Length: 362
Image (cartoon, rainbow, N blue to C red; front, side, top):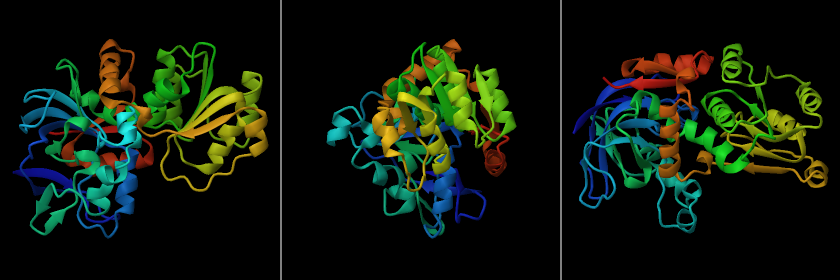
């Protein structure tokens, strides 16, 4: 079928809205009409790295309505409202153990179609177009998905707000709820206040964490963090570790880094109290040096986290309930753009003036 999609043909060129061909769904696939798609930092990272890959369609925070399902699909029906998330195989040891974000086939299933050989879901006048990004390529009017990355949500949920649940919000909230697990006695340091960091702040507030310290270089993002309940909001500085230790009386019990900046991560580690936990969710970090004596003598923990360690169908259902109850005030971070204004949305995101751009498909 012919659909409209935002095509990237080089890392330096803007997206172009084009007519492309989406193949028919296979027996285990689902055809989704997109209502909204969030723009995630990962989309921009992959666009920058896709030089030489040819034409590609990105997008991995889709939300929409199911139009058709293949005969082998179970649990999803035509007419269902859905949030799309990352792809997983469902059959490797980690998937069977409840850890699909660490699926043995995560890389080929989620980026193979755009960064290398993969599922050819899309084509155009010039030939193959890289697609099936995160099992969806949702910078388009329609997407082909599978049950593993298609979460059914209540029809009462506003899909234009729900689109980021499938990645950015899931990552931030999941890192707090599933990995860090702070409580009312905890102190939490969040470094980087994009969509992931601010979603983590919302999760901390829902858990009634005693004190949250939020750090970002962009003043407008710091103001949003303050409005969401952060106890102390700071710009980055060389004095961060000392400030944190003074405020907390010895360091934070929990820290979350979304920046992937190794200097910032080193500060986050230095800000930990004994037995403190640091979780890393940012992509693209270089070699990381951690003081081994501090790690051992203080019983501190540093670990990575992909997609919030989520079982996405379960967590997205919980997130949907939080949105509808007001416990996850995404309106504080979401800014809507018509699909045709994708390049303006990307520019605003890169400039820091838009935290979570969400594209609306007409």
